[in-house]
Each structure stands twice: as C-alpha cells, then as structure tokens.
Image (cartoon, rainbow, N blue to C red; front, side, top):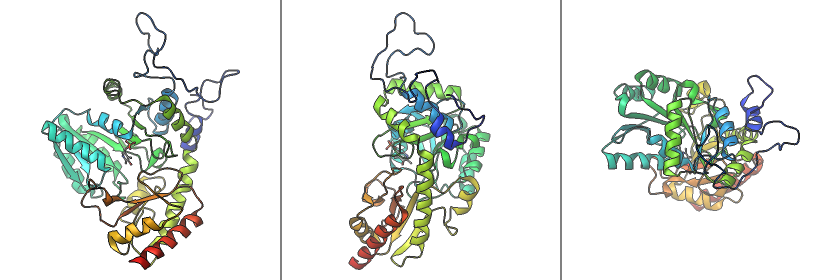
Length: 387
Ligand SMILES: *Cc1c(COP(=O)(O)O)cnc(C)c1O
C-alpha cells in the first residue's frame, strides 16, 4: 500500500489502499487473476502463493483496504459470504460455549448461534443491546474460556444502538471474546477494534461492495492468533470467494465514502419527513432527536447510517400495500446497494417474533432524495387509501 499522508482519512483509504506498487508502466488497479494453482516445487516459501483456496493475489488488495479502513494492524480476511465470515467467528469458541447475541441481530446469525448451541449443548443468551446495564450484568457472569459476546449495532432490523465502547471494554476486562457485526455502520461509521473488539465482521455484500452484484464477507482482527485461526477455518472449510467477486468488491469500495455520505444524508432527510406524515405510525432512525438510539449514536458513531425502520398505519396489510405501491424503490431483501430498497421483515417466518409485523426495513440508496420522497409519499397515500 502506498499513500502519501501519514494518517490518511477513511475516505482517502477507501480510494488509495490496496493499490499495486508504483512502478513505471504498472497498472493502477490490481489484476484479476484466474488461476486455481501456482507454479511451485519443493517447500512453499513465506508469502508464496500455492493454491487458490489458501490465498490469491486478487484477494489481497481488498483485504488490505478493508483492514486499513477498520484501523487494523493486519489485512482483513475475505470469505465467500457474510455468513461464512460469521460462521468462522463462531468457530473461535469451543463447542458448547455461551454466546450472547442481540435479540434483533441479523436473523441468520441468530439461527446459526441457535443451531450450534442445539448441536453442542451450548447456550444462547439474547439481550436487548441498547440496555447497557443489563448487557454488562450478563457479561460479568460469563466464563471467559467458553463465551462469545456477539454484537451488532445498529441492529438489523430494529435500529437499536448499543453503547459499543462500554460493552467492549467490559468484555475485554473480563477476558471474554467479543465480535461486532459492523455491516450497518460501515467502517466509516465506527471502528469497533479501537474500542477493544477482538473481531469485526462485515457482510461485504452490503455497503463495502455496494452495488448488489456480489455476495461476500470479511473478518478483521488485530490479534495474530485469531487471524491465524480464522484463516485456518476459511482454508479448511473452503468458505472462499471467487476472484471476480473480490475484484468487483474492491472496485465498489473505492466509492464507499461518497455512497455512504449521500445515502446517510438521504436517510436522515427521509426520516425527518416520514416522522410528520399522517400515514406513518413510527419511524426508527438514530438521526432523529427523539429516537431511543440518538444519544448513543451521536456520541459514538460518525453519521447515523442509511437504514430506516418504518411502520406505516394499517398494520402488516398496510405495510404490504406500501411495498406493492412503490415504483422507484425496489421491493427486495438485502441492503447497502446504490439503489433504495424495502421489505417487510416479518414476511420471513424465521424473523424474530419481537420484530413488529408491520415493520418495513428501508435501505436508502444514493438517488435524488426528492425522487425517493415523491415515490414513498405516493405509495404511503396509496396504501392508506387501500386500507
Ligand atoms: C446480510 C447480512 C449478513 C449476512 O451476510 P451475507 O453476505 O448475506 O451472507 C450478516 N449480518 C448483517 C447485519 C447483514 O445485513
């Protein structure tokens, strides 16, 4: 990595990190290499490529860039999906461990925690991550040798905001392994390693790649042993990404700062407008001064993220009518793409039962905010009229 500034800002790192060395005639972008194996004989030397399940020159620049963005001392590890990265982190604690999870974390992460506990006789403790004292009490009772504090903030899909500095400091003090799913906040919004998290995870499918065209995950850690364990898991379980996906993700990452800046501004504007709309029962976005997560987010995060929670009037039927009425917004799952999308989360039978039936999760993209608002407003009117 070659960057002129001593301590470049994240926006600069997103553009400058993971570039090939500057040599006369060298490409500005890393090459996309299609090869499953590398020429080798005898004993593999340090840093030599051998076989593409173990590491490739197309992964390295992306891993360097994401590691730099999270302020880590070593590169990230890229995985074939966000869930592959989550599964690798869950494998860091022994079978039968206690895993503390936010009640409203990403539903598949919760499902995997339950599944592992059921197989191996472990325990899953669900907490409300925005109730700091309750979580601290749970952490104080954990066995450091067999526990994982799994955090996600803001949570998916409820937008609860955890006091990550407080929770991560407590885990560190107790010697409990901690990991943060930083997908919603992005590395521009917060860097949990600096607060003492052992591992940070992203579904790179979302903001890091940013264009809804690849499925990828990453883990980031400062710790040499954890890095080695995660790498071993990736290699042995074969949870790897194809080179083209990673190349595209690095291309997408170059505009992360622009995309996040624009989508966050759009989200805050829409949240404010939705708050006053007669066809809206509730809006959740940490930017709103009255939002339960506002104070902690304002104190700990840079920006408030680009995902909104919206409960229109008319219950689940009203929410479904709204989804059916939008023309510009895309009815789809996932988030973090340049395009705005929305979905009713409880359409999935696996979504937590404490998520309201009528909750819509809106992923705000980078379109013109007036076009986004016009479409939402007409859909709200259409849905309210149909109800
Ligand atoms: C999407 C998502 C995941 C899972 O990532 P995949 O890339 O879909 O496997 C994990 N955590 C959060 C917060 C997500 O939004």
